[in-house]
Image (cartoon, rainbow, N blue to C red):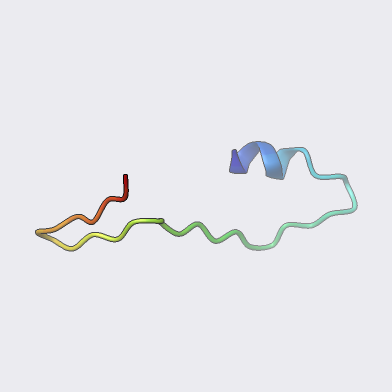
Length: 35
């Protein structure tokens, strides 16, 4: 999805940074997942 979004921006749009964060967090021993 992100690559398609970036590739289809008009020529006058400059994307300098892209931040992707998880919706669920995990530790070394435990994972919290939502339904």
